[in-house]
Image (cartoon, rainbow, N blue to C red; front, side, top):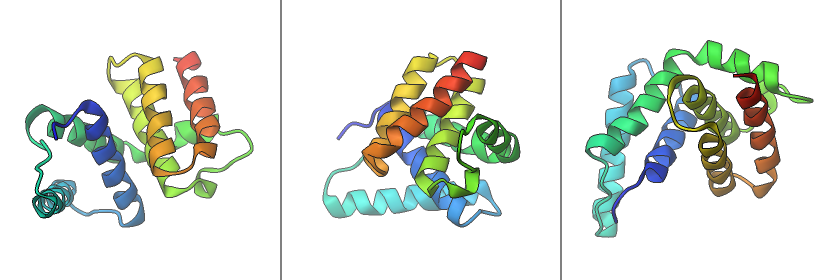
Length: 145
């Protein structure tokens, strides 16, 4: 199966959720371990994912960016939440929002694309009920930028 940016974002969310539950001391080592696990799983399934080159760098850029400014990103999210606190959110929701905030602030990806991708990721990894939360937070950020 050929990987896409969507797959790269899925990998990034998986890494960010894992890092949220067990913060790494060495981000590079943490990501290397993740890629080894992806490779091992793919070889068991008989079909390699293309976790090389630009897509791997795309995922790693998001993980490094979020983990490098976690306090600032969390402050932005906390300021955008209505009726919620950051610690009440699920691990997946925090990971998706963190990545979305980072992408809006640090890339030229159009904001509607970031919002749509994050909604789809939350829907895939969590619950369809989270889509309105993700949409609301990221839409408020998009309007303020």
